[in-house]
Image (cartoon, rainbow, N blue to C red):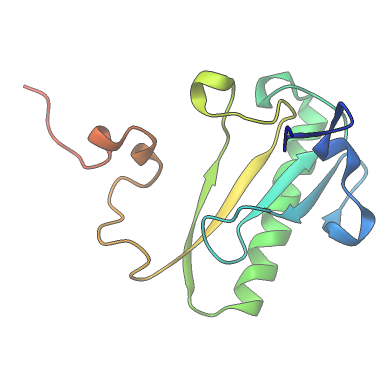
Length: 134
């Protein structure tokens, strides 16, 4: 069974009300079903749109407002959170598995990885840590 779709429909277009943490007219936030860290969440535009580059300016603003709402909510619930990674996979080559734009907000805690240097650069593991090109 394809876990990304239910009866041929987009999972993010079928999110249930009780799964929504915050929402506005154009987007909503929910917790990730396969979290990288505790309280890893997704910010998702309500309009079915393939990727971030297809969002309207109003949708980008709506998503950014929800990122801030979720950040504040997470920090209130867990004082061990000391940072965040914000990530967007755009296209299959970049790791996008559900073809409906979504933004990952991943809370980070001291010691959650041995060496966090490079952060999102870790999507290509050999490039995560800074090395000067000659």
